[in-house]
Image 1 (spheres, helix red, strand yellow):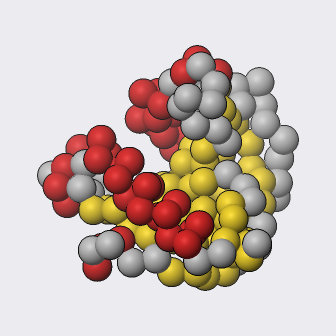
Image 2 (cartoon, rainbow, N blue to C red):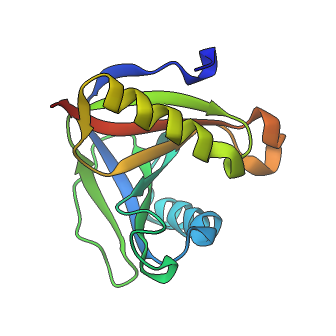
Image 3 (cartoon, rainbow, N blue to C red):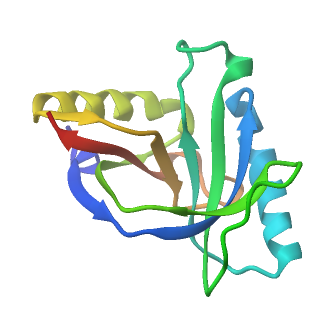
Length: 160
């Protein structure tokens, strides 16, 4: 692995997030984030930190139109949980988790190689994935050259 693909095991603190739950192809991600951040603004919430996508399954496991995922944004301040509305928008607590994490630098279309390296590291070091994978996006695609995009990949893990 290159230095950009160094894997770290760390514990995540709980964080309150606004989220939008989606079923369908990942090409909807940019539109979903637009809808999420518009809702956050309408509610008067304050987003904090990088944007997050949580993947509950992967292409090949189910047909593309049945992929289930969420876009999320951590929120500042004291915000109460709320069940999703009819549009799938709500607020929930992402709990404590131990994750194997690595950084991908480059276009989103090339993230598969970083995933392969991370999954190989997890298996080789005696861990197993125990929950949905998350991606955190540290810059805006519209304002950043594809070669400079930074995406953190986090897999919840435990020792086998």
